[in-house]
Length: 132
Image (tube, rainbow, N blue to C red; front, top):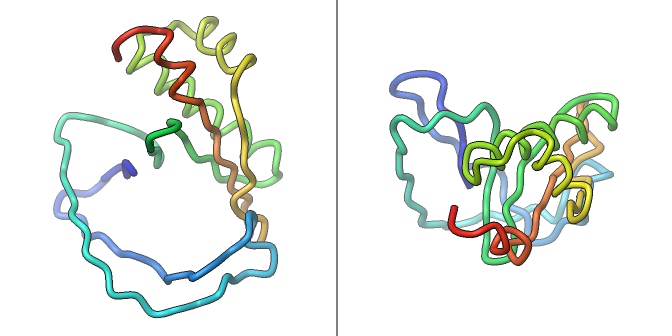
């Protein structure tokens, strides 16, 4: 997970733990549990992103947060286009065409005042573009 930092010396907060939670957090909670976790944080100086993004073995993903729902989807998609341009050198048209063929979306939150949408691109598709 990549998180933007906007203030020098900013701190990091890890939120509440859930043993299980369905997509969308539609009732405002998951199965809340206490957690003992160990994690590390690496600061990547000189790299600028505007909004959270992440990657795992299967995909890269961006997050959008807005109200109404279509604006959250647009926000997540715009962030993905920015990432595809920066990492893979695609222009806006090529990035948009790629997304039109392979993008996947998850609605991650519908409970808070704003909706959260996750925009995902499979790595198997990105591998066809060559090295990042």
